[in-house]
Length: 516
Image 1: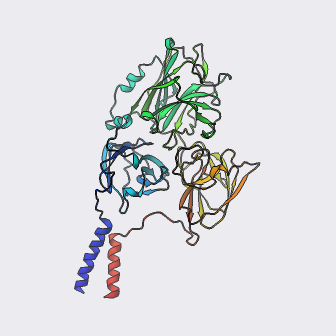
Image 2 (image 1 turned 60 degrees about the horizontal axis):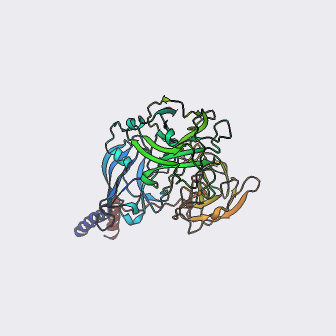
Image 3 (image 1 turned 135 degrees about the vertical axis):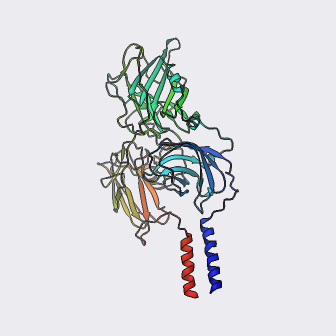
């Protein structure tokens, strides 16, 4: 008996060590390599470096205080929502400033378990920052944005940059200033869009359709600027043409879209700067007064003009503009580029424009009617301002059972429904190839009130536990589908089932009572 008890204690401690302890090897080819976090929001920035087979470091790490619960997640796609938590430790809601932190992967998870490492808001199901492990490099160059955040102290750089302009007006107090200088000898004008926002914010200014007497977004020709990792130096300056108020359809180039060829010499980036204290960005660019494809910038008096700002989608292949809400010009707005102006105030970051999220909403039915409507409660902000309603419920989570047939009716003009692994959607015209479509490929599920589309879908053993209903043409109109097995009748989970020390010892105790 005594010998067995001794053996029991030894085995118990061995099990505890095996389960809780985690020896970190040094075999991964990623060790010593680094990458900068991209698609960042909530003031998050920093550099991730792999230290061992199961540890990594976040250096020059910044995050706002008062943020929701953020965790490190891993995923095989850039959408992340179909991934898993890879570090148990929650990031502090008190925020970070140029911190150096070390994290350990959960037992049983390695760098081979996922392709993307992200900071994920589990409460609102949103990406806060992400890196592709393929981008890890031993010779990484840190961007100006992250460098600016290393020591967040006031500098005269922003003031010096804005003082180089002849004119300035405030378009939105505390949020958006427009600077400009006219160069008549070269028939050019230089603009500086100064706006307060995180990395996934865009700002736009341009001329309205000269054929109408009031400012109108439709048929306007704005220049859109912002920060995005897919663009040279992380900054983009693009000509846009707005054929409608809908999100861009990249297959047809209709909606709020960049011009097909944005490489003419009439528009060029000059410089970009970022103040990490006020979260203010200044992007300076030059354009000709009369471009080959653009409306002419006249100096003969006031002309109708437009401006707006808003969030970007989390698409890491290109900047995709999302809805700007109330942050846009009124129909009475005009600009007089020949008249001197010096009417700008200081800017200060006051939050990310976009939609709000709320408590989850669920639909559990075998007949699913898809319509569209406004989305003030979109669960994965920022949104476009329009999203799917299913059976009258805005942006719900659908709960379905494998082996059950579901009737899908679509009455959403211009927004064909499809079922996908992508949390973003908008497969039409996209360049990414890591998306799996489970139903509605090629945009076949398109219908309206007069001629609805009606089809059926039966999830089976090959259907994952989580997927998304989305618009085939536009990003971020849909949300999540949770899939369960019929025989269980309860939601399954991709969570790992582990064995802790207490379980091991209790098991051994029960074993000894039974057999001794």
